[in-house]
Length: 105
Image 1: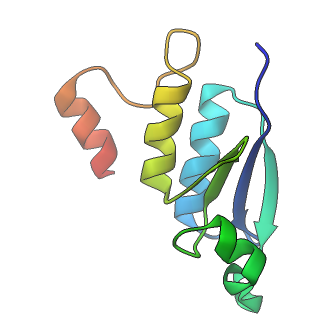
Image 2 (image 1 turned 180 degrees about the vertical axis):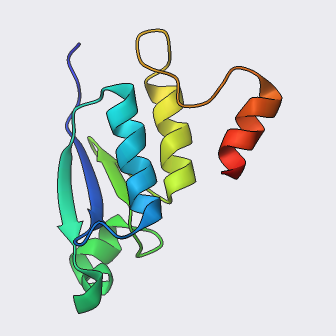
Image 3 (image 1 turned 135 degrees about the vertical axis):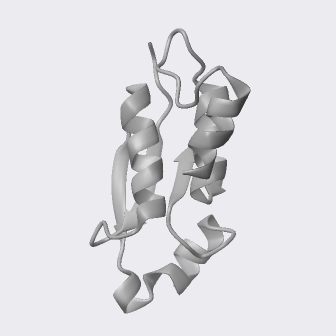
């Protein structure tokens, strides 16, 4: 498959569970991506360049082509819709209750 350019911005120390959630979603689906780091200890999330990309000024932020998306739950749901099963691995169970439980965790 020919993938569009995909970039995930994470915190530089990989401490954020939210950034890790987006990282795992991309990895589990088998989608190649580039990882870029934002140094939160230096407040890089508030720098003009990152503020223009991230609506929330937080990590993670995902970029696919010209589309930018912040917030881990929005990112994983977008990836599930953009790269659906069976071609890609499912992130959420088919069963509604199990899917709700997975989102809860």
